[in-house]
Image 1 (cartoon, rainbow, N blue to C red):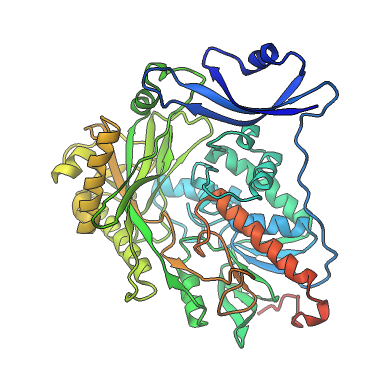
Image 2 (image 1 turned 30 degrees about the horizontal axis):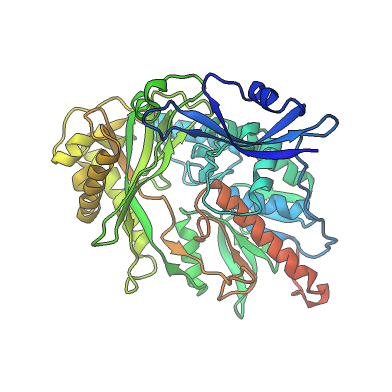
Length: 526
């Protein structure tokens, strides 16, 4: 009979399989349930901690395939706006459960999107609908493929299992810090799309949604930029944290939204070798360990303002990831092997929303900073580059020669300490000083700050009912994912998409088809 064991410690010079054979010779096979690196001790070398399931002869160690219950459904298809993690997994869950859907994506298929992004990095020619934020795969496609999440969702195993089925590395199902890699994640998208299409999903690429159809606070359909009209009583909104135009459309329809806290700052880049030495000490170059990461945070007790690292990318790159021609944004990513000589992470300051400020205040603040970043590069003689400043120069309020960086767009020297709002600069500098206390050497002349990190999250929440997951103001509108304020990363966004679809199915099970709104399911061409 199988048995589960936890906290099995394996040294770097040991082999898990051999150790299990020696400890439990009566068992013939095993499955890893969890693997993590423990590098906390200052005296001992890092080691691995495992949870495993042991199996006897004749027992199957492979995990069961998670297949959701299928519904006998003949109603109108779901309309899903956005093909990022939330939208794609909402679509996958829907079709696997027998409900057809239309998926509307403002950008192109991943294969075409990648070409346009590479052109942008080389030549600075930005496509407004195919960039690091928009296009099939959403912003998650260029975010390192990190699957780390703080949520405790029962849907996480389903998400990880499906990603592996579509080509993600198998170890993501048990690593404590699962990571697909941006290069591998791009390979996952195509079979995921094909699976959705095989089961009844229909994609509409290069089809920005420009209007919604509503009557008496009931959402009934949408209109694309091509002039096509689609109708359904179920519209799932998964447009991500950068679709400013969608918020403006929702505001016209009096959809209830509210401002929420967000964060702004910069991205810091160190040599990966330095991070490895700080975290792994004498074992820093051990081949089993790979690129090390870090997580830092500080909260000022008097103001309550937090400064923290976010989306840390070991062995990664700093990318230009804006969506507007006169604005600059940066983001980080790593490929699967994490073999860049640089490590980068966002360093951001929490921005509290004001109850007296207009709904779009956070969006306007974000856009103003991005525009200032763009203008600073132009004024410095740059074109497509990102603004940058040595970390020591930022703290000393001066501009000096630049270090080499990982950014494929290149960088130009800019006074980032003057570019950021004064309060952000002040709190960021104070936080960095605290990080130096926790991680000696964090402040060094080889560290570079790159700007601006302004899209860690969306400053607006499209508030939904906690029971039905519909907008609290409009029936039939289901806000989901990061852009609606209900997720923060690939895994949580995917899980949220699944939750919403399951909730819709739950409501369908208690609603007869006669009670559904009578809406046309065909396309009305312009």
